[in-house]
Picture 1: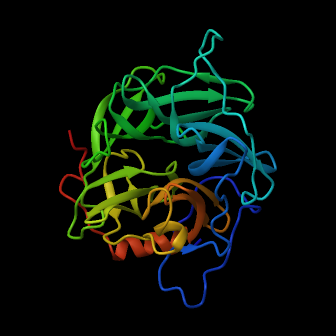
Picture 2: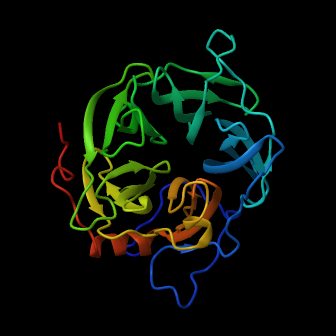
Length: 341
């Protein structure tokens, strides 16, 4: 490794999806050529799957997917894949129990994130708690799913757990919101000793900047990726147009020991809705990142994103190229560079 090379800290994942950067691609993120990878009506009871999470699981891959049923409400479904592109999706939603083993089904569930911490897989999603807020659950085998205490009261969305404790504490990103299609929102960080009691809240990043693409609201996306220079966090930024919201993808590098501090942040979006599967669908003009697969040996990253609230799509980037671009094209918003409290 050269002195200035950015490296992912973690395991090798040589079987992850990957396509080399096209010769005519000018950006640092490029789309999978066979997008979308999940289309309309993927199972008998589901109409659309999007905004979903995937992780390596043994020699294969497993996913917790947002599936909007044909009656309109979303629930979470398990899916399995040998290549992380072609998925076998369970038709029935996850059946949750509480910590005493009693049924504890959410009214609705959407936009999950999935992370392995030590020997347990944790799922964070948006749930109903007298209003939209974060649900938290766990599994060890993707057969039994146990709900834990809801981290926050309404209203909150876009909950993202870090993949390890930092200074002995669990770290959770979130985006306080309201009861509707929130026309505001910054990214906050909270910490906990036990996944029950959350506090020491800090604002990580604010919406805005000199451009418009992230001027309405922002929200954390996939689980942050540990690198030798900090935590790489993909996020969505939203702008308002006369035709509604537009969701694009950006990235930030957070301080390794204190991730409430932003080191670099993309001034311009990395990917914005352009393709028909991103601009046309149940909710047009949405690219909403929820998961990554990444290989520490090569620095390859596959970003899984929801497209137009209808499809699952994949884009690729390489960590050293991406972070180099971020450093050369960074713009922070007031308060980003400090532990804002």
